[in-house]
Length: 153
Image (tube, rainbow, N blue to C red; front, side, top):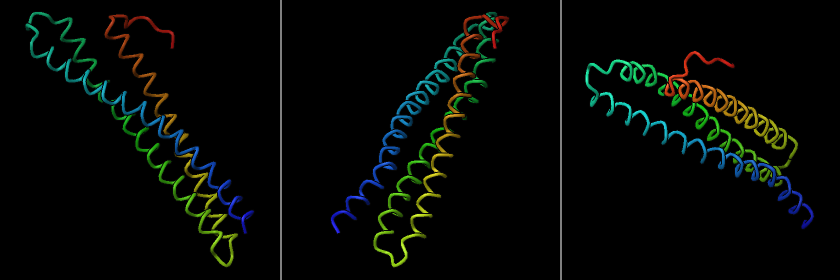
């Protein structure tokens, strides 16, 4: 019986580690989200305070704001997928625990494996959104620094 409990705990450990990893990813994305929101607010304030004859800066701001909103959407999607991944990892842990108390523990183990793989796919999709966000951040930076003609994509 003790060996079975130890094996169950070992089986629950991998999804638990993934929860921690996703938590770190979420922390970073939430920080980015806050920074982008603050940047949009600052640009809106600057736009309102600019004189109408400063068209260069106004045009730059008008280019940046829609891109920053697109960036926020990418961050939102990554955060959503990381959060979904955490929930799925929790469900896989529960399935592993339930498998030890069921008459036929094969089905809950298969369910736990399917949930775990689904969670990994969700986290991978979140990483893809995060990579797209980084690329867009670079594009926005080029606009901000008036380096629009520089292309090394």
